[in-house]
Every structure is written in structure tokens, then in C-alpha cells.
Image (cartoon, rainbow, N blue to C red; front, side):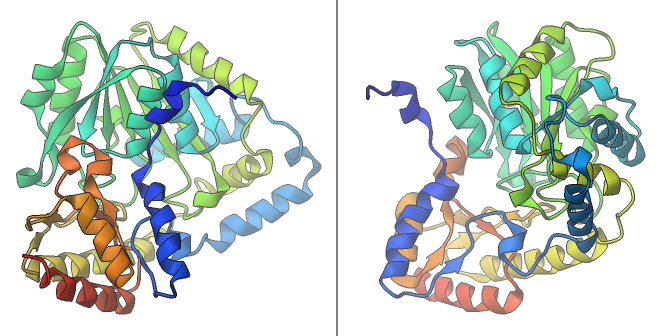
Length: 393
């Protein structure tokens, strides 16, 4: 079969490195997995109240057939209520699109933007954005975030990179891969630029409730400019395998994004719908069960603090301590390429990170780690890393 050359544009460092990891594992070496942001692979678990809700939903006949392509109406209303409860934003259930994970929403958006036009994306960033935009021949223009300023977006760099072809500005907050939480002041400045240039803000907020100090604020709560929010249950409800996400368009002043919304809706129709039982289950608990999160955040912060302390004590590494999400993004102060560092470390020690250059231009010279393993496992793995660093000039 003759394949599309566009397939070659698809790269995903987070899982691509697993190909080598499986080869190393076959050799009998013990592996320490610090590569993927899946809390359920560690000692976190999907809350029992959500599991019970899914069992109940499956037993209800109404949950087992196709739902509306845009999403179950009750769930869409609960999503609107969630955003109102948390951030005070007034949204419309008709402007909520339920997707098979937030990744499907990213794909829908990329497919809807005209080929050859540009979208500003943060660097470093979650690599799915780069792959989908490139696959659909949209040009991702990377704007800087400043490592010296807790990885906050560089507002002046954003200004410089806007052109006549720019369609939107993407932000990922809290951030994957850096663990940064953007300050409300910076988000407002970014929104002002978007308003000046009549640009859509695409705000990925999948980790919204996982800022360690509660400082996160939803973009739509900070500005009146059009915002397309992406979110889901994978991270804050500890259920990545359930594959349920959503997109919400907030365009109070009718800036002309109805065509985009219809383009997203058309794509939702050709794939039929997201999982109906999962939608019914989530609709029943989304705004009723919140107490579980405090223990999750406490555990994440302790592990993040430990990881940060250990990394910053090592000769050859430094780290801006994360403020949220599951991740840390250390800088390598050795004369070695980040891909080579990660691959050699994996082959020689079994410790698995993800090379930073897979997360954009400013990811070079870094690696991404999750901070999900318990401290005992972390200590063992980081002792190995510290010993390995001594072997590099």
C-alpha cells in the first residue's frame, strides 16, 4: 500500500522511547518507569465512587447505546456546572463537545484549521500538539517559556511571533512537561495580545485541580476574549484509561467561531460518540465528589518536593521545582545530547525518562520525569542516576 508522507510527521517521544525500553527489559534488567503520566500505573487508583457509578451506568439500559455525538446532555450540563463552581465562568451546554479523551479534541482542532496557517504553541509542550498540527499541515510556531522564571510564557516573544497567518495561541496550564502553573497576571497579558490580534486562545487545562498551592485559574475566568478550553477526567479523576474529555467554546462577543465549532461537531458525528456508559457515570459524580483530591495533591507534592531536592543536589543536573501536574523537567549540565543521555541511562541502568527534545525546541538539553512513583522507588532510582552522572565528563 502506498502511504501518505504525512504519517512521517507523527512523533510521540513519551511512547516512542518504550520501544527501546522493551528491548532493555528483555535483557533481564530491572526497569524504573518515570516516563508516562498515568497515575494508575503507580500507587494511585481511580476513586471507588467513580468505579461504582460506572457499574451502575452499565446496568442501566439507557447507558449502553449511542449517545448524542456532541455528548450526553446531562454530562454537558454537569461540565458547565463544574466550571461555574470552580472558576465562576458562565458557559453554554450547547458549546460543550464531549470527546474520547482530550487528545481527540486536539486532533479535531488541528484538522479544522486551514493548512498553511500558523498556531502559536508553547515550548516546551506536550508533543501531541506538534504531531497533529504538522500532520494536518498547520504550522506550529513555538513561543518561549522562561526556565529562569518558573517556565512562565515569554509575553514579548509571543508578540514577536504573531504574523498575518496566525490563527490561535495555545497554552497548557498547568503545564506538561515542566510542571509550571502560569500566573493569572501572565495569562491575562497573553489574553490581551490575543484580543488585540483577534486570535482564539486554546487553553489545555487537563491538570486544572492539580496545582500544589491552588494558584491555578481557568483562562476563561480571567478574560473576555474567545477561549476554547480542553479538559477531561484522565488526570484529576485518576482515570486515564477511561478516555473521556471535552472541549468548551466561550465566545461571548460572537467573534466568529461558529464555523470552527461546526467543524468540530462534524468530526464528532463521523466517529459517532464517546463511551456512553462512561459519560453517564461521570455525569453523576462530577460535581458531587471532591474530597478525594486533597490526599492526591498532598502525595504528589511530597514526591515532587523529594524529586526536586534530589535532582538539585546532583552534580550535572538542575531543576525548576514543579508547581503542579505530575511532571518535572530537569536540565542536563553535561556535554551530552538529551536523547543520548536518556537512551544510555536506560540501557545501562534501567531508569526510564523521556528526552526533552521530544517536547519542542526549548526541551533540548532536558529530560522529562513523572513524580508519581513512591519515594522509596524514587530514592532507589535517583541513587542510580546520581552514580551514572559520575561516569559522564
